[in-house]
Length: 313
Image 1 (cartoon, rainbow, N blue to C red):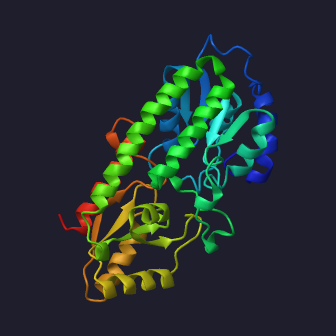
Image 2 (image 1 turned 120 degrees about the vertical axis):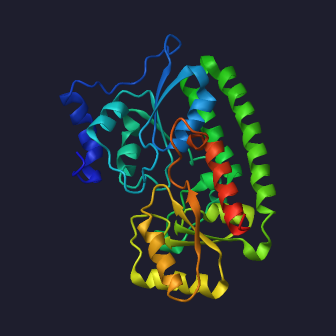
Image 3 (image 1 turned 90 degrees about the horizontal axis):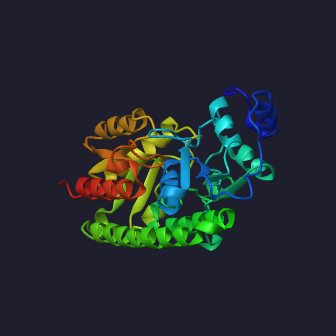
């Protein structure tokens, strides 16, 4: 199915499930006898569901470390997992571009929830180059991501009201940790003088971060990695870096490093040396068994890496 375009995949989901003996069914009326079967797309959502659901959920994440959700295609195994889920959580806002139709049209067969659905649209960024859609990378503003966590809580309560108290308690504790995380990011950002707060990355994933924490953000590629950076993009970014004496730029774990290396080489040709300040986690988190494999660990890693490089520490 990796070579099948996504428009028909939503229709093929049911056919495939039936052909393989995978029943696409509504969850049983009483879920108290077993964990809730959850499928989540990106790692940040997987982590949030685990924190909210606790022992009541069994979460399968489709996209692991280093996976770019903009380019991800549903595999046969993914269809099997989706077909067996009680509920599916995804980002929405066209992040899972090649799975978007599948996830939206599955709603008639399996409960699907876009975790961004409850976020006030006036708080979302709508880059003109993103075809009139919103920037999906809301997790880089911790306060916006807190709203997504609340959406997860409400969806689990609606599905499994008998465990409502657990979901509410877990969410309250997790939101307190996220509030502390937001404060940490703000305190770290203040360590960088305002004129030095310029973040240059492989693609435009950090605009919410920039708005929330006071950084000018420049990406080589657009909001989605489906857009290719051309020679003109590389040269324009190199001009900006050399002219403004930007000390560092950053690679991303889910984007090929060659893109940033091309910018670095172009800057060098302008008689200025810009360092690669480190690897940031943008559309994917770190390995599951590391601190960076959690949302909080990922955000702390990013701000520490950014501040250290821009302060030349």
